[in-house]
Length: 100
Ligand SMILES: [Zn+2]
Image (cartoon, rainbow, N blue to C red; front, side, top):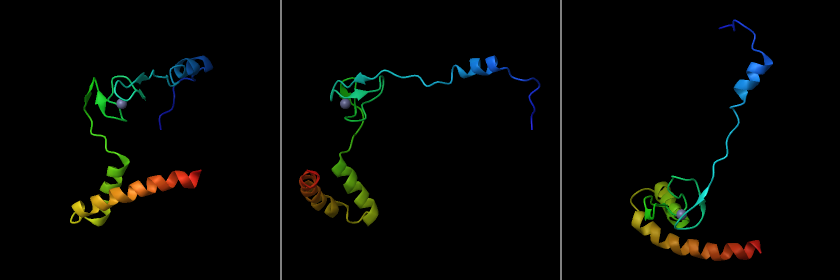
């Protein structure tokens, strides 16, 4: 194990540590969906950057369908997606009633 040759003074420790703090970054608003986003990055909510869509953002329904596809296997892909959409719509309407 390496041993420090000299003792580090309180001051030198603190001077080094003065740069450790995390800096806040300013957020800008998305030109498409008007949500707060990090500057110079594509919007994670709608996938827009500089006025055009650069990322394909999948909705919750699509994500659920994908998950089910993976769980059930590739053979039933087309059959699974259609009934799933109907199910999710019914659950969405049912959820707020339970909460309220
Ligand atoms: Zn956006």
